[in-house]
Image 1 (cartoon, rainbow, N blue to C red):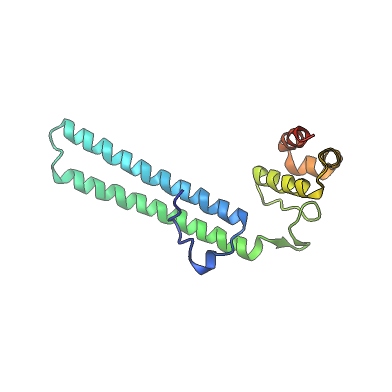
Image 2 (tube, one colour):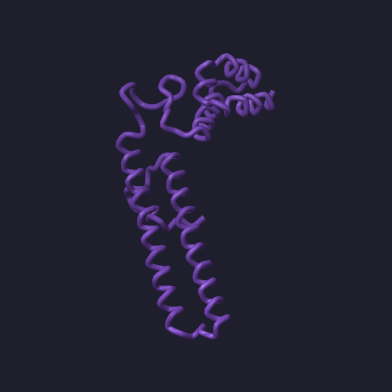
Length: 163
């Protein structure tokens, strides 16, 4: 994936967290979808004009310009939202009143469930090299049940597969 919604080589984006990188990839995907939809719309307009023997008229150029302006506006909204979320995450994303986020001492409830799954998985994968001890510790973790929700069983199955 080519990242061009922001300049990833800019100095302010050199030390991004995994969550911030995920935000950038999601915004880039949304931008790519907007531009792809605009191209599809242009193609539909061209085919409609071609069907009516008007493919070389200025109507096509004018409509393409309108589509481009509309798509650029949507992309700007996505970019501004991304910049706002990155700034907020930089200021407030790594800690709360209890200190730095770290599972299980201070879990981050601002994460969505797939991200929580990755945090808990990483925690248990680094706790011990013994797969059975890892599974036993995870099965006794009551915080993980509420923190992961429906992903609890998925992680249990994953950890059990290593045994």
